[in-house]
Image 1 (tube, rainbow, N blue to C red):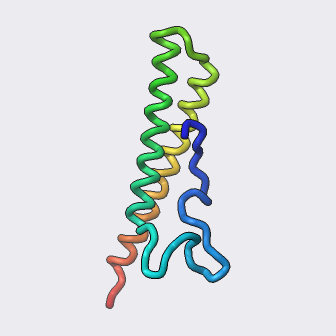
Image 2: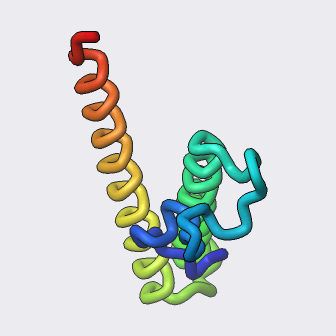
Amino acid sequence: MTDMIIRSGDLLPPLSPTGKTAGAKEGGGKSFGNVLQDIVQDINKLQLNADEAIAKVQLDNTGSIHEAMIALEKASISFRTMMQIRNKILDAYQEIMRMQV
């Protein structure tokens, strides 16, 4: 889990040749909310790993500065990606709310 980076392919499950999500049952599968919750938890783990790596360098003097910087950058990129996704979701929601029925 420490080497996880959020990529666009990681956000949604892959589609099978029939057009349904791979591994999804008829009428089942992961909901959009569950997928988002899993992503937020993964990003939180990256943040915690970065904090731990920084603490090793600062307090214990046993960690590598390079590893701490890499962990910090992974966490930063993942968080920024999550914020952009959140912004896009909010924009889509606001656009739907502006539609007249």
